[in-house]
Image (cartoon, rainbow, N blue to C red; front, side, top):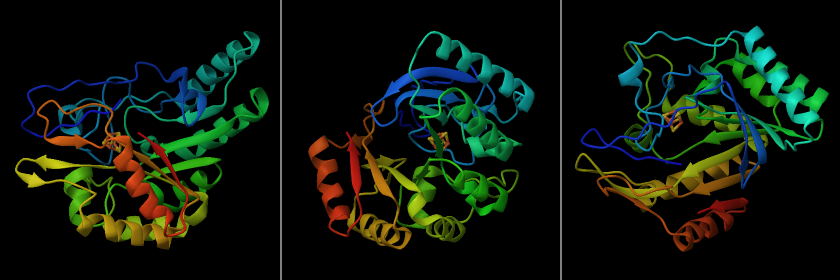
Length: 276
Ligand code: SF4
């Protein structure tokens, strides 16, 4: 599910996880994925405010108290669910950090990585450990090291330039919102992370508040592929928007067009998987 918005949208559908442990949900790329949502259950907490985010906007929720499950509560919830699933003979292919915002902003994220790896080894030793992250916290050494322990670190990169990142992802690193990171720090962290990482990119084009917002125009896509060549990721996941935007300002790319851009990336020697 993806939702696009601009500040002028009349309709906003907010999709929040209501539990700390979610699923398993069947996913094309991860199989039966058990979600570990470390974020508050009532609102989003993220270092980005992407224009396609389905969790609502930070600004609508930042006045609310940040209430996280404690590490002990997470341990108990995760272990109970895994025991139950194993007793029922249900398959789990991935234990996946995902949820209402950016998982690495959880105050004790490295301990949660260790917990998930321990639980995977105990209950589903053949399952993968996966993280969906916007990569802004890779600049913190303890987060960088923790993410390295995971089987599938899936790292967001939606643009080829700083300006377009700001238009698409709305990085938050100024004033009262210091959680984001600079463009230069983001790119150098991704390059440092290198081939262990999987880069995830949502491709689209359109306008937002009268400005062109697109990561497929040549002035964006070319620098984006140059960055990929520097990162040399394990592979790239290309996505389209999951649904049309309420005001039809952002265009969902058809599968054929996604394939076209995948081929350009493949021609640079980088593997690409397309999820249209
Ligand atoms: S990084 Fe994810 S959770 Fe954060 S604003 Fe973007 S889509 Fe939403």
